[in-house]
Amino acid sequence: MKLIGLMFLLSFCNHLSAAPINVTSEISTLIRRIIWINWNQSNISHKFNPDAILNTPGMIKKAGYPAESYIIMTEDGYLLTLHRIPGGNNSLPVLLQHGLLCSSADWVVLGKGKALAYLLADQGYDVWLGNFRGNIYSKAHIFLSPKNSSFWNFSFHEMGIYDLPAMITFITNMRSQPLHTYIGHSMGATSFFIMASERPKIARMVQMMVGLAPAVLVNHLQSPVQHLLPFKNEIKRVMQLFFHDEFLQSDFVRFLLKKICQRNISLGEICSNFMFMIWGDDREQFNNTLLPVILNHFPTSISVKTLLHYSQIADSGKFRKYEYSRVKNLLIYNSMNPPNYDLSNITIPVALFYANNDWLISTKGVKRLYHLLPNVVDMYEVPWSKFNHMDFIWAKDASKLVYDRILKIMRRENSNNVRSVE
Ligand SMILES: *[C@@H]1O[C@H](CO)[C@@H](O)[C@H](O)[C@H]1NC(C)=O
Ligand SMILES: *[C@@H]1O[C@H](CO)[C@@H](O)[C@H](O)[C@H]1NC(C)=O
Ligand SMILES: *[C@@H]1O[C@H](CO)[C@@H](O)[C@H](O)[C@H]1NC(C)=O
Ligand SMILES: *[C@@H]1O[C@H](CO)[C@@H](O)[C@H](O)[C@H]1NC(C)=O
Ligand SMILES: *[C@@H]1O[C@H](CO)[C@@H](O)[C@H](O)[C@H]1NC(C)=O
Ligand SMILES: *[C@@H]1O[C@H](CO)[C@@H](O)[C@H](O)[C@H]1NC(C)=O
Ligand SMILES: *[C@@H]1O[C@H](CO)[C@@H](O)[C@H](O)[C@H]1NC(C)=O
Ligand SMILES: *[C@@H]1O[C@H](CO)[C@@H](O)[C@H](O)[C@H]1NC(C)=O
Ligand SMILES: *[C@@H]1O[C@H](CO)[C@@H](O)[C@H](O)[C@H]1NC(C)=O
Image (cartoon, rainbow, N blue to C red; front, side, top):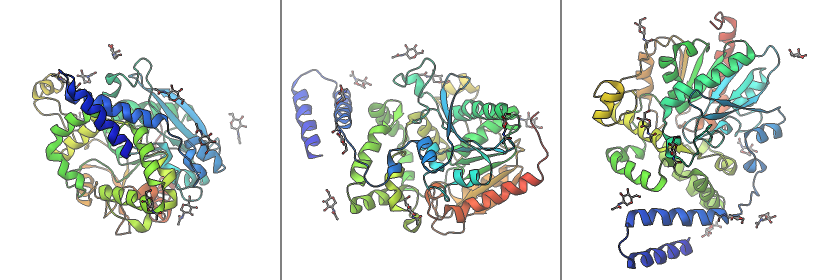
């Protein structure tokens, strides 16, 4: 790292002597170049856990299950990867959808007998794992390159109105039956509610929804992230300068985190402490042995616009569309402020799971959501006082604390299951 710093300073000073220059643009290209050189020369060793080098289907196969991948296209041309653990001919289809900076790997990281995807497969469900546009498995478009900033012109709004409809129609057509359950973590729930309010026809193909830490009313943040909100315009500028439209250049960040966090146990602890700082501290539920596996998939890429959209709804406390300038709002929405998503028409039975120590999604916000949704069939606070935002997918005891209850709700829905695709 010292060497990088030195190189950086040297080349920066070099550049300074030559006038005229655009300092901000020079610094940003320089940083990108250094980042790229180091990344390209890396040779990460994976000595801890073989899962740490496998992709989602690889992990599934290693756990002894069949794995399938499908590439589907959205109405606006994005190419998304759906992973699947196929069930038998009479199995009920279930779609699991990941959260911010995550991917389909979320649902298998905990391993056989513990991860939700495997528990569902063991119960005979047909398990589908989605990947939103922009993440490592869905970074493709029929004519836009990810290098083109138009590629990154999306937030969870587009995931709701395009990605989920593409996945849900694909699954229901293939199986000729409605989707039995949709399970979404964090952003997976955000975009589901957008889909359900904006695309009611698609929503009718889903029989039940389970929202884990649903990111809908996200003011009341407890995370230190809240202190950044007042600076959202400055942050927007900085992010656009360094990352352009794809946040973090996630491949590099993952590489860096791996390098640092896997060096030895004490550095690994520093890394997990840093993560706890963002979404809540729960050392007891975090399995340090899993860190290399987690860091092989997290964080994945996301658009800057998605983060900005979250910062807007965190700031306003309203679940509403992306906010442009006043003039552009008028042009696009025909009003000065972006319109709210209408949650009152969502008739699908919904189960909401939340956690007391989730610094990103507060109990208060979930309770407000509960009052806005007409058909909540279960409202469940995870009975572990330190349970945090990522524990829903990474906790040692997630199966006992969360997944068992999901399976129970699904069984109950099976028995009074009456609706079919219209
Ligand atoms: C400097 O570069 C930045 C980023 O490329 C650009 O937005 C800005 O307009 C440039 N400034 C000048 C004075 O050229
Ligand atoms: C990255 O490394 C490979 C192999 O070492 C090399 O062939 C390639 O040219 C490098 N790419 C860049 C952009 O440096
Ligand atoms: C990377 O590491 C592996 C295992 O340690 C080794 O076999 C391989 O030759 C290395 N590759 C490079 C380019 O150094
Ligand atoms: C499932 O359906 C396929 C095609 O419809 C059929 O070939 C296969 O034998 C069936 N499998 C079972 C276990 O019924
Ligand atoms: C990005 O895509 C748009 C739309 O296809 C196209 O007009 C534009 O030229 C592309 N930009 C670059 C830099 O490729
Ligand atoms: C991004 O999308 C918005 C709304 O769909 C549109 O107004 C804007 O021009 C787009 N920007 C780019 C860079 O494609
Ligand atoms: C962990 O690695 C860091 C940096 O390489 C080093 O300073 C520290 O002493 C190491 N700690 C242990 C316990 O090995
Ligand atoms: C919601 O339901 C009301 C009453 O049934 C209806 O008037 C309204 O158009 C619906 N809104 C949407 C977005 O479907
Ligand atoms: C922690 O993760 C490792 C590697 O997947 C696994 O073998 C171990 O059983 C896990 N420990 C607990 C308590 O879940």
